[in-house]
Image (cartoon, rainbow, N blue to C red; front, side, top):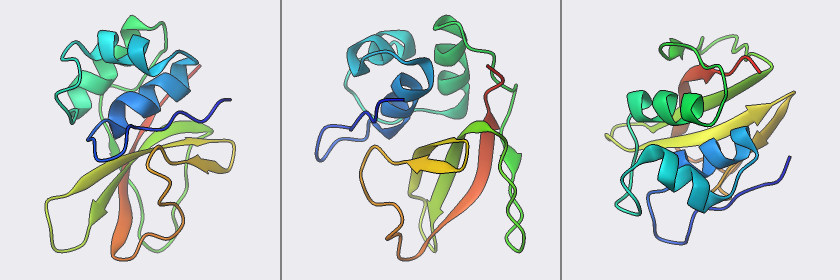
Length: 120
C-alpha cells in the first residue's frame, strides 16, 4: 500500500483515498471521480469511482460507535470537525490509518463519524 497525498491546500482527500484503496495514481482517481481538480467528493461519487476502478464497495456509509469504534478490514473513514460542516476522508486498512493530508492522529476536534466498507 502506497500513501497518496492530496496536494497542499486542496480538497482532494476523497480522490487520494480512492487512489490508495485502488492502488492507482491520484490522476487516475481524479479521472474516475470525473470532476478533475475542483475539490471535494460526495459519498456517491466515491462509491462510483471505486467501482469504476474495479473495487467492491458498500452502497452507503455506516455510522461508527463513539464509545467502541469497530472498523472493517478495509474502508474509507468519514471524519467531521466538531461544530462545523467540515468533512475529511481517511483510508483505513488492517489497523492502519492513511491520511492524505497527514493530520492523523493529531486531529483536534475531529472524530470519525462513519465508514464506507471496501470488500476487496
